[in-house]
Length: 303
Image 1 (cartoon, rainbow, N blue to C red):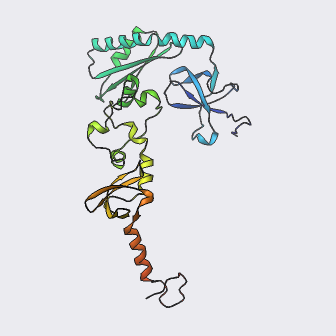
Image 2: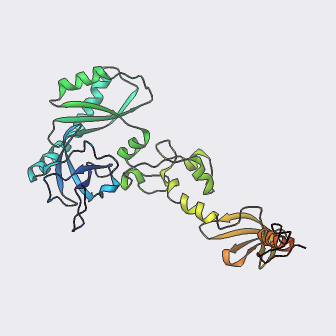
Image 3: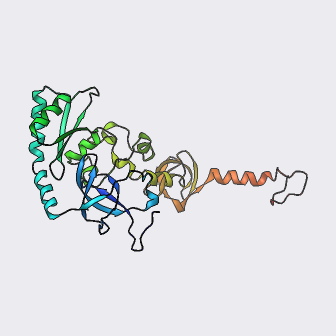
């Protein structure tokens, strides 16, 4: 039976292997002293890895506990030093990989990152390609001869490439994916439409060639706010007179109204929706249509 301890801890923890990597769930196991921020050694499909405990996870937040692995041991100072040593060799490994690929005349793949495991027993080379039928078996064999480690070639998408390369976005700030995003959320054209963003590729496309991640940030707020603001074309009563809505400014909580050819910005507390008021008035004047034979208790009388 899984429980949460009195001190707020749990027998499950979230582990991150990279600074902005995905959170993976593991059992605490025998390392009951592990706390958020500690570095631990874990067994993964890519061999032993060094990861950081991020938080305790409530048991009901884990969908599949079957076969979940546990923490092997706490990381030692030597483990942390060796991790840094192998990280310092990753650039040279990436250059070697690119040279070997060039010698094998592999032109359809772009290799962007090499990553050693904490003990140097495993090297993962991340690459991107548009050729889904690309065969890299020969390159794997060649790299196995060059390095005394197990080799893995991992295909990644354009967003992951942008995350690794870093740089600045169109807003002039460092890319979100390289600074704080740990996972990519689905982005759609509908999100841009709801926020009134121009649908030109220059406005909605990120440096990775995909829709910008920032389109997700305020989408829900726009949807919620638009439900309480009148749509374009609606008749509105304002301090300037009756007019029609020409634009909706969600962030300012206001609308632009056309009153006899003049445009005015009107805030939420300054207008009344004429169409809705007229509909309510007509319904009240129509009387009750459900109790024509008498016995009406809704307060309206059939005229």
